[in-house]
Length: 255
Image (cartoon, rainbow, N blue to C red; front, side, top):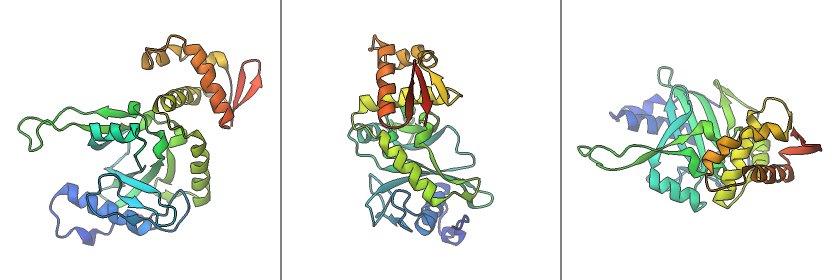
């Protein structure tokens, strides 16, 4: 896999946004395989498609590309806020490719996949409306808060310019599919508790350690008056999905 951009494509463009779009989309079209099925390439949809940028001709998986110069960080810009929320709640969003690149070196540095079932409204940040003097006055965009997505939903494909093992990537995606939940409220609860479990440093942990996040969960779910019971319920679901193992006496093992 070649990390460099094809800079010859940008000679007729002057907008920095257009140049970045052309370079990054061309790179994906030339280099990316389908991380869901392993097909050697993904195809570009026609321009201005509202839902996705690429698709796999073998398994029909769809992908939207977002890119950023420099360190990917905790958030990345996306499109219209209302559109994004509707797509998530309607279960109509694609998987996301998130790319970071070096503008000075004109090459890809990091590339991760966010499976579509890890998207919940809580990870979408509403931006301020554009100023009245703007061409699109009043338009409201959003950011994807990457650092709120559980680590199981941030699957690295390229790290520090190095391509990771394709078989391990596909295996990670298959494992993440066990966490797929269609109901948006249930999905939010499951990933909130999973994120709490991820914060615990030891692989073997106790129920009381998860209870320490009770106040945080209460703030996120103010209408629930029995947070501890909900925590236990979500731990049972994580157990059934093979993410953790119940050891007895209030102890669990991360798998």
